[in-house]
Length: 242
Length: 103
Image (cartoon, rainbow over all chains, first blue to last red; front, side, top):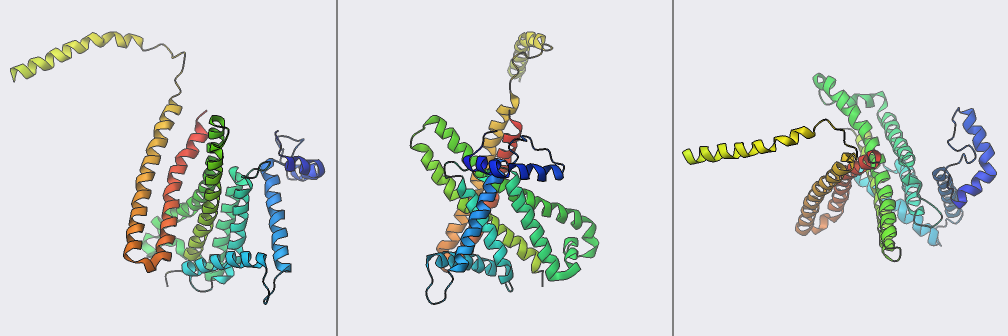
């Protein structure tokens, strides 16, 4: 299997542990010599980079003398906080940490594909599916936390004599949200890669740079859209029609 | 009326010359045409075209709303971006099916 340099590095030192872990879970990897696949290695890299970034920011926080990193993270936090306040309303501060993390993760995953020698983990359908499942579980959990067991009554619709019709419709539409979040992110990243490859095979010099620029713009937009839609679903789950 | 009828009957009679085409049925195509690839091209074109129309309507409405009420920029921008992404994803579903099904 074709490995990126970082993947080869991870497989050399952690390949044995990864293989043992997979066998303990009864999973047979397709290439037992390199159990850590490219996209898993890229995800690990993104997680490590984000951890370093957040720890750096935390260690340099200061009220009187904010540095550059603090401005960046305050800008991001304020942006998402303003948006969720606009969409969710009151008590939206408790969801901001999750949304900021989701945004940073997806953005860094998307942008990593532009750097040569790395690839976007989001170009593999498993990673956007993971993000979508996490978002789905999160907003349903927050719905239960905010409304108690009465959150399930939301699925039954406004009147009791339509509940037999509303329940399947609501369930299908909620699961379709996971599907649409996944496919939107995956298809945008994958199509960006494909288009860059196609134009690289036609004109190897100069023109693919334009498509890399497009990929950067699309990465930002798609990360923002993912978080925006999660915020909208959160507002639907948390603030009922009252 | 007579001339129309005679014209119609002449056309039908000429079409009887096309009967040898029926002799071709029954032999399996040795060079199988990849119908999936052809139809996927048309499907993607239709999906992109209709997506383009939908997004243009959304953008036009957003521009008009913004021109009438520039102070509502935040809400209009939010609704525009959300709407464009949702419409875009419909065309992307077609692309995903193409990548999954076309060899």
